[in-house]
Amino acid sequence: MVESMDTLAAPNAYARASETAAYVRSKLPEALQKPKVAIVCGSGLGGLVETIEAEPKVELAYSTIPNFPQSTVQGHAGNFVFGLIGPQKTPVALLVGRAHFYEGHTMDLVTFATRVCKLLGIETMIVTNAAGGLNENYEVGDIVCLNDHLNLAGLVGIHPLRGPNIDEFGVRFPPLSDAYDLDLRRRTHKAWKKLGLDQQKRRLHEGIYAFVGGPSYETRAECRMLRILGADVVGMSTVPEIIVARHAAIRVLAFSLVTNKAVLDAGSRGNDDTIQAMSKTELDEHLNKGKANHQEVLEAGREAAKDMQGLVKQILSDLHED
Image (cartoon, rainbow, N blue to C red; front, side, top):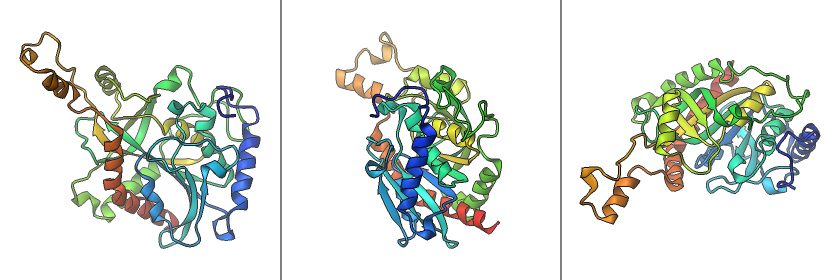
């Protein structure tokens, strides 16, 4: 079924999302029926589910939910989790794992969960991801609050809103200059200081995320190009979800965890004097210095989990108090 879907948004997308939302709602107790906040957990950040109270709690495997795409990536559990968070017992929905375009899913499926969230009553989405750091001032383990993006895939036509507009969700030509909610970003910086996180090694930045299709990590030349274009971090998710969320008038707060520093140096040429006497092993080590791998993505996610959990809980607590 997944493989046969057209690249355009399916004409029955609203009907499918409605069917899924009705199914999910039928599994929820009264206390969890009206979540206002959804949290999307990126690679290695599934630990955010630990912020939810033990009871009441409902966990639905993606494989059991009608029409839901399946995540196949290590570090993405594939569960839709509902519960209460923080001292105010705010009802939330957590998407522990996401579908990616590089897995072979259509953009319609990549963003399907976002539309289901809209029909469940979600008003605010907190979206997280693991990303490569392009900004030379970023260190592994830093957190970047996104304030803009470069949608390279979208600029060449691979766009989640391509095809007939779904009027039930939003307008044909939605603006994105206001995609990253300024009030939520302000609250993020205040929460960071309130928790004393500004006194430790890990830093909070604001920056621009470049969305690329993947699944290969970027070349040195591609990293330099993206940096010249203004990107601070680069990754293979998030932007399609944000576009669809804003199309449906959902407020967005997005975080990237810097899990590796992108290699911006052009590297040695084959005729460089400095490498002529190196062995094959030494050449491999020289070329592979700084090379990204998915395991370090997961490890950085585990180490940052507690700070991310505390930050999200504090932001939600402050939101509830207003």
